[in-house]
Image: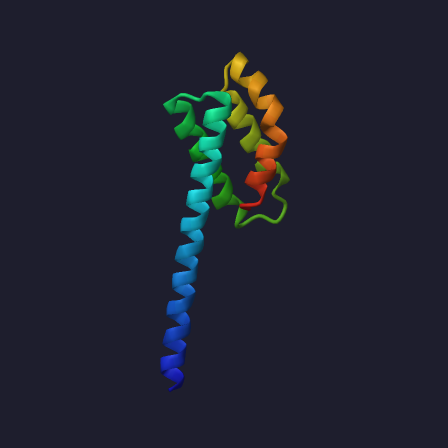
Length: 104
């Protein structure tokens, strides 16, 4: 009976981990989509921003102080923007990054 409970617990843990990872992936896609619509990103910029966010989430799992990771990610995202996009981004960036931080 203990063996059965152990296996059941393990399977439940695996399932919850998978669901959590899928939720984060969907959240990243939603955040990138929001930025794409507000700032008018092209496809290359969109995929680059998505890559930066996924890297940020992955790296943040092993680090307690996430501020330096977030600042690096901000710089990378901003480096993909042209002058007009940067002006639009400056308007929404605080709220958008707060949403990003909820994923970490």
